[in-house]
Every structure is written in C-alpha cells, then in structure tokens.
Image 1 (spheres, helix red, strand yellow):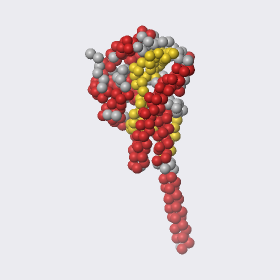
Image 2 (cartoon, helix red, strand yellow; image 1 turned 180 degrees about the horizontal axis):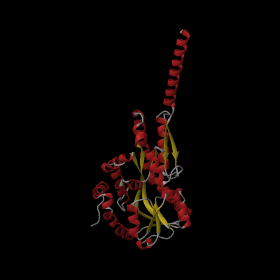
Image 3 (cartoon, helix red, strand yellow; image 1 turned 180 degrees about the vertical axis):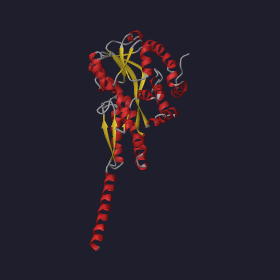
Image 4 (cartoon, helix red, strand yellow; image 1 turned 90 degrees about the horizontal axis):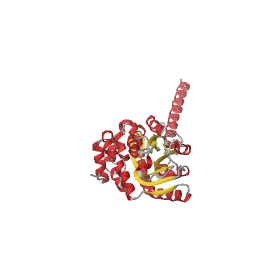
Amino acid sequence: MKNLARRTLLQVAVLAATALSASVALAQTPIVIKFSHVVAPDTPKGKGAQRFKELAEQRTGGRVKVELYPNSQLYKDKEEMEALQLGSVQMLAPSLAKFGPLGVKEFEVFDLPFLFKDDAAFRGITDGALGADLFKKLEPKGIKGLAYWDNGFHQMSANKPLHAVADFKGMKMRIQSSKVLDAEMRALGAIPQVMAFSELYQALQSGVVDGTEGVASNFYTQKVYEVQKHMTISNHGHLAYAVIVNKKFWDGLPADLRTVLESCIKEATTYANAIASTENMQAMDKIKASGKTTVYTLTAAESAEWKKALMPVHQEMESRVGKATIAAAYKAAGFVPAK
C-alpha cells in the first residue's frame, strides 16, 4: 500500500510539474500579431508598421512578436478584410475606401473629391468626434479601429496628359472599390476599373487600364512611373489608412499588454503621419529625376474646371454616405461648398 501511495503521490507531482511547466511555457511564448498590408516596406505605411513592431517588441519585453507582411504577401485588397475577421491575421492598415464594401458606407466620405484643402483639414475629421464614431461602426463587424494614418493627396497618372476634364473621356482608370471614386471617374468622363493594388503595375504596363490615381510614395515604390508617361498634380483626393485589429483578439489580450500596445500604436501613428508629407515630396523628386514621367501641375483655371465637374458627386453620394455624415465632415474639415 505504501508503494502504491508513493507511486500515486509521484504521479500527482509529475502531473503538477508538467502543468506548471506548460503554464510557464505558455506565459513565455510570445503573442504573435500578424500585420498584413498591401504596400512596400519603404512607404509611410510600411515604415509606420515597422515602427510599431519595434516599439511593441521592445516595450512588452518579448511578450509580443509582430510579423510584418507587406506588398500583399499574404492577402490582396479584397481578401485581407475577411482574413482579419476570421482571425487569420490580427492587424491591417487598409485604405479607408475598403470599408464601404464591408458595409460601413459612411467611410466613403473620405473619398469625396476636393473635400480637404490641407492635411490639417483631414485631421480635423480623423482626430475628432466623426473619426471616433466611424470606428465604432466597425465593431459589429468584429473589427476594432486603433488609429488613422495619413498619406497625403492623390494625384492622377496616365499614359497621356490629363489637364482638362475632356482629357479623361473614355480613359480606363483604376480605382479602389468605392462608389464615391466610381462616381468621381464617371463625372470626369472616364471608365472606372476596380482592381487590386498588387495587380496595378502589370495592368498599366499591358494597357488593361490607362491610368490611376494615387500618391507619389506609392507611385515610386511600385514603379508606376516606369509604365506611365504622365502625372498630374491635382490634389483632388486624399489617401489615408486605418490601423485595425481583430476585435476578439484585441479584447482577449491581458489588460496591461493592451495598454502598452495602445501607446505603441499612438507613437507609431505620430511617426507615420509626420513622415508622410516628406516621403511623398522625396518620391516626387525621384519620379521627376527619372525622366520617365512628365509631371504637370494644374493651373488655377484647370483646377477650377475639375472642381466644377466633381462637386456634384458630393450631392449624388448623400444617399449612400449619409447627408448627416457629409455635413459633419464639412464642419470638421472646414469645407464650405460653393453656392
């Protein structure tokens, strides 16, 4: 009996030690955050993601490991949101146009042409009540919004000069999946083509599309300027991203860890927003220096013509984006529509 009792105690001790060892190993195993995005590492978004990774791994003492997957390595534009909802990745930084197809149409307010006169006008929305309210609308979709990352103004790029509105007639122009951007291109007389960002270079090279809109940093890092002969500085739209996480994953993190990661996101956001303007200016200089693309800046008269053609899009989109959302955006951005 004594031997039996001794063996039983030994078994209990072994089981207890095994359980303790497993719990210690679990505690020591880093929590992995897969951060997927569709642009190059050397863009404002890519550098912002890298900064978050460095801060998170350092400040959590190795309790968190951030794996970065740039350039659509894991998922393309249309796939990444579903992957986040399913938990296949934990973090994304999609452009704001991606939330319309998800069912949160109010985010397409950011796509309204000529809404922002400068970066401060853009941040008037993202840093205020409207930006917070829009993030809340993502939560029923299983998504938590953490921050807005700015990437400056959209320009036009094409295989022919785009100066006057008439120049757009019949042009096949790549856009993100946004009804506002669709209406924008149609108002200019172009034919909008929704296409994943990862497919853009080849589509431009082969002539599947004739042009696109975007920011200089993306045009340069994706070598768009090598397959487009003309670029127009129009500042007609604004590109921004939302850093988002799978809500169930985020809410399940230990509270102390979540607090640290929130501070890391905040710092990475300040960094990404600060470098966006500089990065785009430097990219523009490199594009000009390449001699492969002619860069043209709209005159005041040409810009006024574009605005006249595009402003009706604002009213047309009231039924989709919401009249109240558009009014709130006008107020936050200091935008006064022409009478």
